[in-house]
Image (cartoon, rainbow, N blue to C red; front, side, top):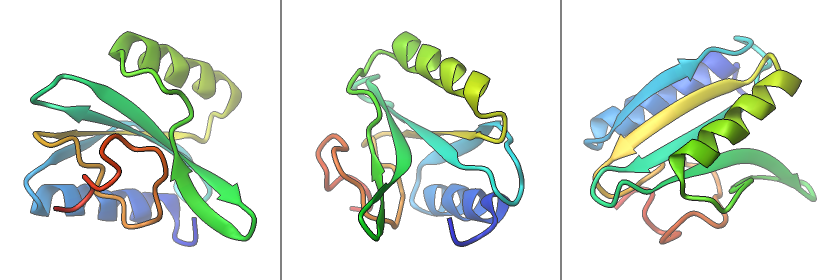
Length: 117
């Protein structure tokens, strides 16, 4: 992330709020250098998915680190990642359409165009 993590997370939560979604911080990581896991919950279908920042060549993109849509499995994945990365931020976004509100490139999100309709 080019911005400090705390500013970036605040901006993401603000975008979600302004577009009718709801986001909150599940776990605060390092304010300046922490990376983030974004858990998105579709309030209509009750399905969820995770997004994580990754580097592909010279480009930063967001990918799904696991294809599971089961919340218990996603939470177990998050817990495992927290054991390895104590600086990790965990943000949950709840939206009726399952939008993630990221402005960065996202690969593999359900409906891959759901972000900002």
